[in-house]
Image (cartoon, rainbow, N blue to C red; front, side):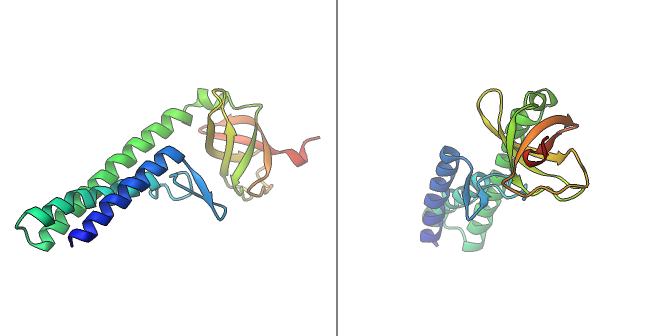
Length: 175
């Protein structure tokens, strides 16, 4: 069991460092490393932290304490879940501080972005753009024409802000 905890500790810490240094990246067209990837509870840094803390707590407990295996696994798992929850709260607060303000979104009006997620008719998607501080940001977006559809990868003009969403117009339809 010591080996399992050691591997979890090393892999978790290395993946956490890599995801924080490299940021979001794409594998096969799917964005990895971000809670913005469509599954808000699935974040590479938070999952890596959970696995790493599981290993870091379980490793010394299994090697040096005279506790039973279920107790060690339970303590390590509880620590991993706590680390995951804490990091998800921190990441959510950081994301909201970065792009969640209407004033920050208003600064994007007039810029060109790229859809990172398809926008179906009457629905919403995700748009990536470079904000006024030259930071790449991704947030939710809706189309000017609610009956229209826009494919992922399409270039769009950000024309307005509606609530906490950007309103976009595909560039192909600009006259």
